[in-house]
Image (tube, rainbow, N blue to C red; front, top):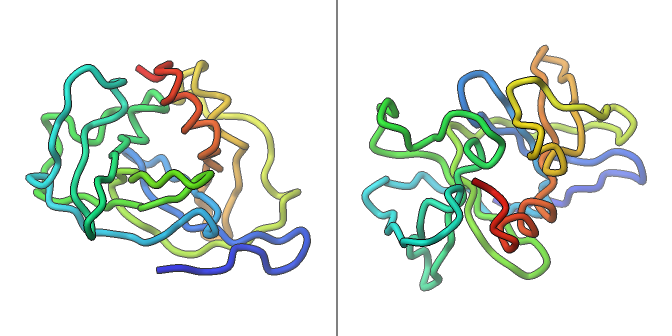
Length: 164
């Protein structure tokens, strides 16, 4: 799945996704390469990584690093012992020419919103040190609050190994 993310100068297109419990997020579609249903058995764990990096998987001849976005934000880890599925959803993203995967519970739908509709702030369930990873909140027409995830900040935090 690919799509242009800008519809005019102030309206952007995002893909929404469920991270943990009832916490929804969104990223700009220009950073999304594709969505994948991933079997958990395909994840290879690697020691001594930041805790938010759950491992790697092979995808189309590429080694893809996998990030538990919920855990990075201080929510319940997606791959906790109470996770009841043999599969999860994976958002394959590209940020500054770096490809990696975001593990999420469910991929939602495309959302268009004006930049002004994304208001600063984070909900209380997000850990304070993860605040730089959130651009703000958007209230959708379906009544969901979506957190705008800043993938550049996430990538920088992973490089600094400050997530955990």
